[in-house]
Image 1 (spheres, one colour):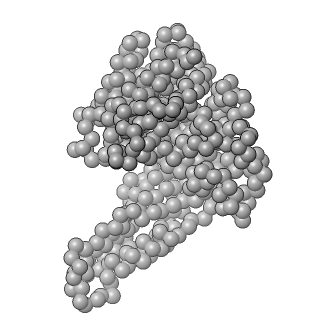
Image 2 (tube, one colour):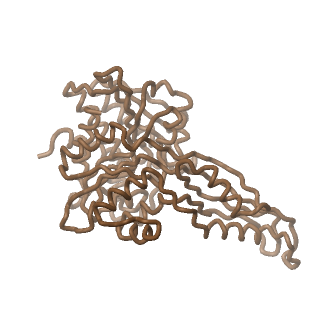
Image 3 (tube, helix red, strand yellow):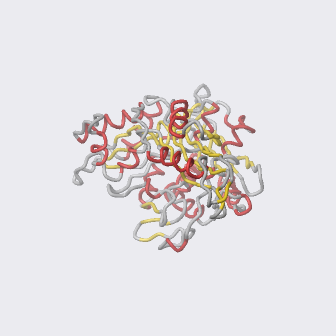
Length: 440
């Protein structure tokens, strides 16, 4: 029989999914879903006497912050954060209503089921549990329910860090996405030992634009400085280039643990094949081995018979820790001196200690509920709101505990149609998260 903590976790996750807080990235089409979700959380906290502050830098773009005092005032506070916005859906691709929060065969379906209203509902339920039971955590806990993560956090975490840093006074570490989900430790399906990944590092994310310039001319008279041709060469060079493998500390720790468990060497020569043997983990870990720069948007002329004076391409760039300048120089070398490179947003990678005491806390919590489970650091190939909190000196860790079947790829649920999570995984998440926040 489930506990009240587990029941409320499931209830709140479902109710949050039903609030359509879609973040399109376009102000005119976003609506007030984020603020409605934040007010829902605020009301549930107020029911048990927890005071919170709603911050709304723009109408509808609300975030909520609450603090629970701990028993050790000398310990650094722990930030626990979840974003309330979700990415858009193409409803025709779904077999269940994306905002219906339907449960079928023990599986909860809905946008935000893992990204990341599951954690928002979980930490809300844990906060209420502490208040009801009179539980005082060891450290101050700062709960943040944030807007705009899916578009870079400009109106959520980024805004709060720049304008309201006092809300995070004393915070030294943070817990949030993307990690905590279980993956098979060994290849044998009969061996149920699980690894629970913790993101101790995140790739940085940047957007840059390549621009080639020439002079406009009639299409019947080819020019030597055709901007489209020169841009195409640069885009081809960037898009086809594979940057060298960099064995960051987080990547190496992952390889060491899985190498020992599976009898894999992960040498420079065997790395690609050994990663491929990891099944659905291969693409996740493979993306953390090197910097990437991916052309995504091309812009040039509008008429077929006119050679345009300018052509441009936008790049999505993912940067390993400490690799900013190497990547900048690599792009310059690939694009060539006749291509202008203009940087847009540029957020550097984050990197937190691999052996901090909080890793032991995570392991103890997992052991209490999965005795053979092992917490394994890894490098997240994407980025989260931890990039903003890093500006305040806060070390961010991605750990949303979910025990799932060996063939269930949690990371594949992010931004996917029929996003889903097993209900018993949410119950597990509630139990483990409660222990983490009580003992951290």
